[in-house]
Structures are given as C-alpha cells and as structure tokens.
Length: 497
Image (cartoon, rainbow, N blue to C red; front, side, top):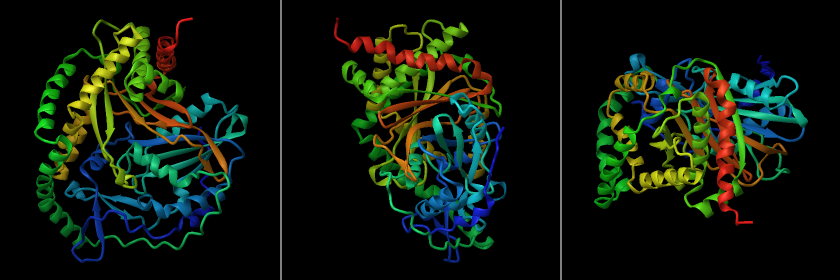
C-alpha cells in the first residue's frame, strides 16, 4: 500500500522565479498580452492517446546513499530549481470537442505539495519491495488538472538508502529531455553551495475567451500552411537530396521485407491498470569491450542482449519457431546540440526485428547490427518524422481520433518498445547525497505488454522493464535472458587459454 505524506504545510515553498526568456513562444491571443503556446503534433499525440489503463509518463528511479533529506529540504531544492523548467508550473488547456490543439498555460494555483510526495518502502526494504511500490506509483495516471509531473521521496530502503522516483508525462519530454530536466536538481559536487532563495513567482493570466478563439482560428488557418511550407526544407535537411532520397527509397523496400517476417504475436494482448517492474544492470565497460571486439555499436550490443531475453521467454512459453522475430519500436532522438533545453519531444522511430530464432549469440549480434546499420544508412527514421509533420496538417479533432485508433486497435505488428538513453558517467549528488543507481521507466501501450528502457550512469547500464501485471510471472526469465545474452558474447572476446 502507498503511504503518502504530502507535507501540505510546505506548499508555499513552490514560489520561484519567473520563466526564463528562452522558453519557446506560440501565437499571440489577439489582444497582444499573452503567448499561447500549443503542443507540437507529436506532443499532442501522446496527450490524446492516454487513458486510465495506459498512462503515458516517463520516469527514473534514482537510489541514493546516506540519510534521506527532510521534506522541507527537498521542497526548498525544487522551489529553487523550478525557474529553470517553467513547463513544470504549467497545465494543459484543451478546447471543447478538441477544436484547437492543446496549449500550455501557467497554473494559477500551483502548489508543490501536489507534486512532491513522500512514501515508505515496506519492510524489509529490499529490491522486491522497492519494485512493487514503484510499480504502484508508475501505474497511477497523472492528474490532468495540474502540471503533469510528480516526484516521490521513498524512504526505508535496505542499507540505509533512499530513492527519488520521477514521473513526467510524455507530452512534456522525451527520454533525453527528461534526463536534462532531472539534471537541474542534481549537482556535480557533494559540497555544492546552498540553494538560492527563489524570488516571488506570479503566473501569467490565462488568455481570454476571445483571445483563445482568435488564436485557435489563426492556428487552424496558418498552421497547416506553415507545415507545408517547411516540408521541403525538412526533406533537404534529413535526406540531403538526391542521394539521400534514393537511399531512403531503397530502405523502404527492406523495411517492407522486415514487416513481412512472422512476429511473436503471443507477446501482444490487452493491458490492464496494473504494472510490474524489473531491472538488471550491466557494466558499460564490458558492453564497450564487446562492441570494440565484435563490431557494431553500444546500442547493437544492448539490443542483442534483449533479443536473448525474449528468446528465453518464448522458449519458456513454448512459442519459439524458426524465422520468428520480436518486432520492436525503437525511438530515435533527433534533438540537435542546440536543443538540449527544449521541453518538448524531439523523436522519430523505426521498427526493428529482434532475431529471437537465432541460437548463435555472435550471429544474433551481427543480424542486429546489419539491420540497424541499414536503417541508419537509408534514413528510415526520416519517414516517421515526415509522417508526424504531415499529421499536423489535420484538424486537432481528427488527430485525436487517429491517435486513439492507432494505439487502441489490436495489432500484431509491434511486440515491444526498446529505447536507449545515454546518461552521465560522473557521480551526481542531491543535497550532498550521491546517486548510486538510476533505473529508467518507459510506459507500455495498448496491446504491447512489455517495454524496455536502457539508461547508462556511472559505468553501469540499467535495463528497466515495464510489464502489464498479466506478463509478470515471466519477467524473471526475461531478466535472466538479458544477462545471459551479454555473458554469451564475452567468451568470444577473450583470448584462448
């Protein structure tokens, strides 16, 4: 059971400085007094498809050494940092019948007590109890009437440790952006100076009804025109015509062949509200050695290990057959170097076949590498990005219906999601306590029972596995299979004798 301790007496600590001037602005509301910042097409899609059985928030469970800070200390830290992430004090505004796209507005009643929560891990506070409590918290949708994030202080972990569980809606950030935001409350040094006292914060008034209508109508007329006008530039940027266009066309043929391969549809099924978590870690140095000796990239090695995990799972279920694959949606960040602070999704995605029918571990890695290399060389990620831009031309009402249909209609095409987020390799601290573990959380969607996120930190890679409760009995097999997938590759890199 959750044991929330909201600490409502500290709600006043939420005051912080005014939003930074670099926050992106949208169209003006017709009166010239307020910016109306609307969601991008991809952000709006993540917002629309969520429902009670499929909450779409990302997360990180960070474990720290040392005594846990008090709630007051933590509230003071967040109050000092909120000025750098103004989105965290904004709510989503929607129009009746979704006539206009969702927009962001300052929360006039923002209180940190609604977002900074406190709970105790049940005794004896081991990994099993921590995973159970985290699964309960992650399974609860965020309150849409408030800013779409929560942070939980979890005490009572064995060896005197404590944890911070971060939840933020996918319509606000992607994986890379989420790590950037988490970094705002972490320090590089244990003896970082005291937090600056936050200045008083005054929320900007909501746009008037007339201004909202004027802005929405303007967006309906000019938005599609802007998207169409920018499409040629995006094509040139992503595909560098004409060679890029030719490669992209060749890649479409290969992608069609991959989609024709039989996939493990036994891993698809309806999902409920319950969530089960599991995680395992690996040495990043070991992964880099395997990459250097056997070829490919770090991501190729990690995907090969996950392939072994699903292979073991299918063998245990007696569902493995020749030529079978587990088809994964692989998100790809398109965030540029100058977009590290942009609080919005900068993602594309590709479909990759995990060759679970291949018994030889070296051959599995080679198949994964060849496939991912071909996807990169033929710019297949550009196709999903361009399709998303084209969907932005549709009215918000149709976009909402299309998004829900795409996610809720049963499909055997995709069995899992695998996403890799590079993290910092130096120790990080929160109020002088060192973060010793970081386990990622990625949501599952309709008809997809298992998703896996990978996050590297301080020489370790954590595989964070999210599953519907119906798939929980097999998670230990999947975890052991991932570890075995890395172990099987290591003898090939060692000299004889």
